[in-house]
Length: 547
Ligand code: AMP
Image (cartoon, rainbow, N blue to C red; front, side, top):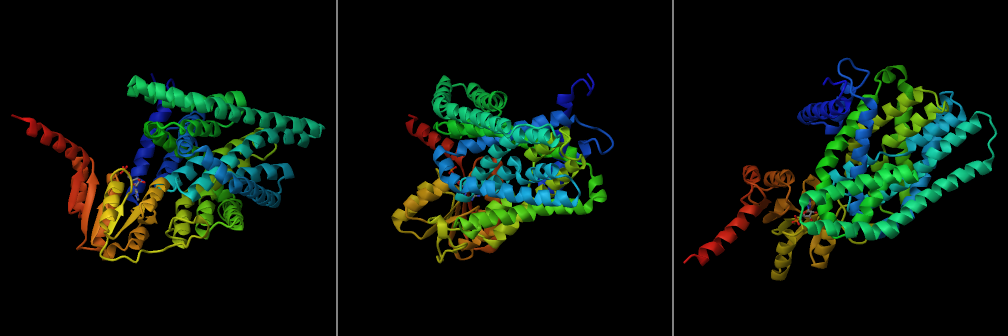
């Protein structure tokens, strides 16, 4: 069979291969892998010679990435979290949408487009991309922090608003065409949509919340890992699809709520692990599919309009978000993170602008502007995040309302304990009991709270970030204990600490011989391999029992 008979396989295979090659290249050149994935898309796209992947298929594959990502985010979110961020996320997201839409409409006016075109264009610039936002928060271990939750809540509200916008835009098209439609008809349509969304949420919260954890529990008891994995995928994709088909809710929102209700089960940790590998592969395809859409000519033909679009996304939206978050009395660090995470656009913008064009509301060149704006803002996003972090480095936990941005420890000659999970919390509790001076470095909110309950001094942040390690005063510490399971990250921590303090005693955790060798090489004094220690303990017992 040729590539033409198997477009799905061709698109997946070419998408993953190109993303891999360009991702590797980006890594070599020390730029963000996202840039590589987007370039891979440009190469696979119709505007460059050679192989052209199937565009609609690529977009659908990307949607699977969105579903799995939002499902994963939902697993981290409890209903309580959702309600607690609603107070700022609802007015924040709505306020930002209004400001961004007004600015977009302003630019459209300068370009000589009619008012309805400007409104749709502005709306398209106002919604951030789920994939970009969630990946940025995940990379920085921020999903489980207050700021991360606000950003995700904000995104959920934006998604909801867009569901309504997708109903409203066709109605505007009818009005613009001059056929009088009674206002009551539009109000009716909006109400029907709202009712459908409410019914979906009500069903999830009343029925899904009981049914899904029960089902997961049941499947876990079959003892079949395969069935458990299938259950996770079936529920995530099934609920998302059903939400979209039956209730006009977006795939992303459907998946998010599936995650939220499954998160009520104590099996959610396992579900997260199962959903991860597939999720990451499809999220990469998202960037490839965005790159495929880009017609690079727009940068030459309309550089000013592109610059204006990017300015609205990156500067205008950020300024609006920053002001709103500050107005609600949140600290500067929170405002900066939220501004940075929303300073980009993505999948929803393409859908909205596509709809506008198909209804002849918006001139076709709007699509190129939105795409160029998306690509530039996605490429800039890590840089903007870096800037935001530089402006407000490390936070201390506790009263999140008036947190100072960085409070380095005053300890010296102490122990720095990285990670406070199953391994680190054991060590910390014992150190505390013995009255040893130590400081904990943690990213996860729950682990941070546990450490504080145990009376430990905590620095919240990714230990692999240089400013976090210096806040823990590694330079003057006696010992560093790295208890995080991920070898690459542990390696970054060990390497920096060793450079900063040659006499430091470094203990590290590993799970494979390769990881042991890696950490050894980077300067750890003792690397303890979990699996090996388990085997040793079992062997001890076997030897003891031998006659
Ligand atoms: P466990 O595997 O149960 O010992 O948990 C590991 C702990 O390390 C978790 O609580 C994570 O939140 C934490 N952790 C993982 N990576 C990092 C990191 N880069 N910086 C700080 N804490 C981390």
